[in-house]
Length: 122
Image 1 (cartoon, one colour):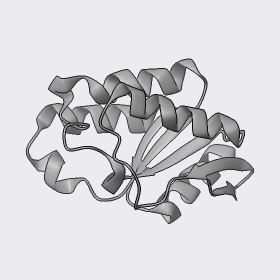
Image 2: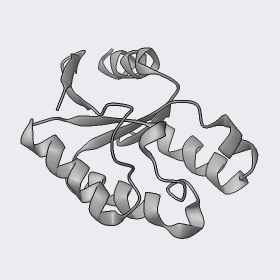
Image 3: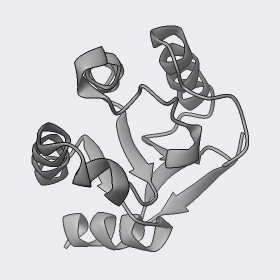
Image 4: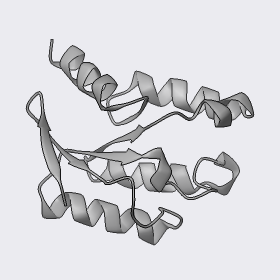
């Protein structure tokens, strides 16, 4: 697994191509990978999310994100989710609220993640 240092934060960067995160077990696998490289944050390209991941009624995102929080592991979803946001007020609210915190973020790209980490350290 590839990891990078972003402003002193060890980030596990999942490749765009790879298995989709479609079940709670898939989320557990990602958390295991993060622990294997001692990452503090996991950057997950939106392309790696299964089709039901961001459909909040499935509760998959909430369940997996809660595990990240429980294990004191941060997570950033990287990529454009604008089409999904347009169709769901609940998802827009969820993204807005998580982005206010320190654990789960939705950002457009790695530069935005880097900037968010830098602001946090300032």
